[in-house]
Image (cartoon, helix red, strand yellow):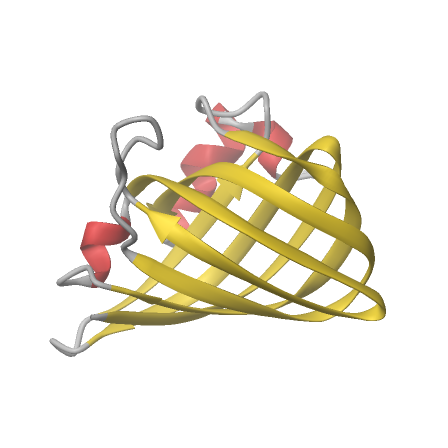
Length: 147
């Protein structure tokens, strides 16, 4: 089983984007830093929902054996919202959503934000290292606003 917490942002108005940077730990003692993102113009990720904007912490639990099994695509389905404070919850599947998916985990979000959102989000997760950041700044500069 994996556990992680991350700091992230999301903005949704029918379609949206989300980015989070997190510290991942599994019950084998592995520790990893990863980025999870979703935006319509990046790596076939998708983000559909209602209306909200938020920033905060996410706590996730999955049935993956190691933190390295989190790399790649996942689908998150849930709801979140608040009038200044913000809370949400999601289920997670690592299967294609149309292939009779199995629920592989869940996550909770706490933070600040406005609006209400029920959403389905296809994300991608990758390992983050200093080498990764330097390479991505060259290959995907739109991930690094201000650089």
